[in-house]
Image (cartoon, rainbow, N blue to C red; front, side, top):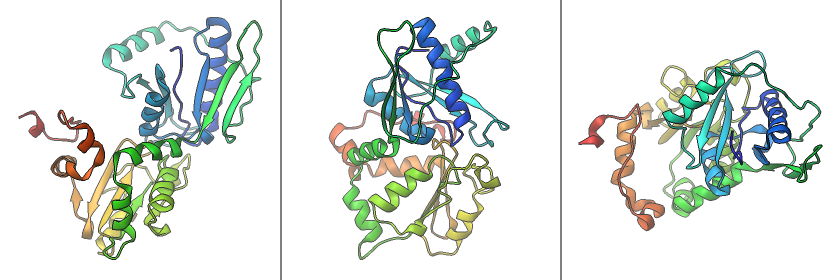
Length: 294
């Protein structure tokens, strides 16, 4: 795996988080590969927060345990994503190597006696047989860490004034019962002062409340209906692990990925981070057009 694992994500299913801990202890004892684990409180971490923490603690990488937008839990689906030291997805050369190694595995060992309280913030140390240093597990408030990153990028005072000032706009954010719920509630309502009803479906659930957390016009119907009423000027929905979103304008106007990127590019002067650091270029992904290539 790596010398230091950055973080893991359980999507509110403690089963895979604890299994992963058992395997890591085995690797520490017999292979001396892992000396420290950093885990989000309650096993909850969004993909952007994982990236943030990897870079913050200078980890070699991070592992995300996620079912994406499929129901998770012991009886549901389960997947693993590996993020590299720059906080981004593993390149093909790394993924291919992992896949080739996986085909040679015949068994794995666990340490079932390890008990870690994922709800308690702070460092927990465990003395292991034949090891001079204790095995360290750190439970962190990933929402607070990610919030501090956002504070360093955006003008929170301007956003707060937009949401609470005399010319305020009403917004509606749907976390779709995925991992983004605690982030949306803490950042949008507690930090920026938006009314409590600005954030909906913010409790992470293993089955996502029975609705696929796929942020599109087909599944984000609650958000779409609210936006079509004309009360809200901005709406957004997040997928299960927080790396995809949908944006809606007033009256339910759909903003596609290309337009979203273009709007950001045209208003970089409003974002303090880019004013200070400058911009060397723009990146695109599968949903965006090839206009950036020209």
